[in-house]
Length: 244
Image (cartoon, rainbow, N blue to C red; front, top):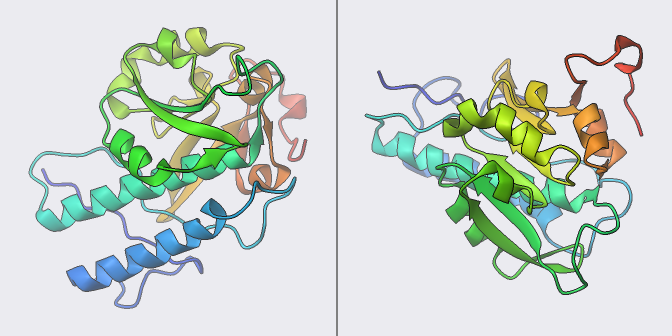
């Protein structure tokens, strides 16, 4: 059964003009251009300050896996989805600080990894060509196993890796890896961040315990936008923490 892609929302949280009706390819491309232009504001320029600039990027499309039997228009929207996900991974990296000792030397690259089968690898390669993160050249890798993923700084976990989440959590435990996925168990299994859809809007949650274990200093402005969660066995008393 063909899965209908969720609507893209503008920065205001409203759907593009035309409501739920079908959009022409040209209109889709125009909305896509607006979304990517909003992301480009953060993607360009010098390294970010301690706090994020405002406003932050517009909401991005739903993070759904590819399904058989989709139309050409749906494929076009899926391609946009991967481009926008790649842009947000880039900005998560720019607004996070890694601990001392993360890199072997001053010439070591900043590594974005993809674990599993996902077109996001190609989207990252295209987006990050010629860019730097924290004054380091960027490298994109496909990771064949959770153990090899431990050598990345930012890691996206594809949907086909659902059965390996527990092994991944053990492999990454206490490694400084900003792990992200749209799998429902991601943050509960020790991942740092998860994309989710609520009320036709894409949001994200961050496991503050996982981020602390990885010794990642995530900007307070990012944390204010996130739904903060903790490990399933964590004491509930500190669950209301919003800033670090």
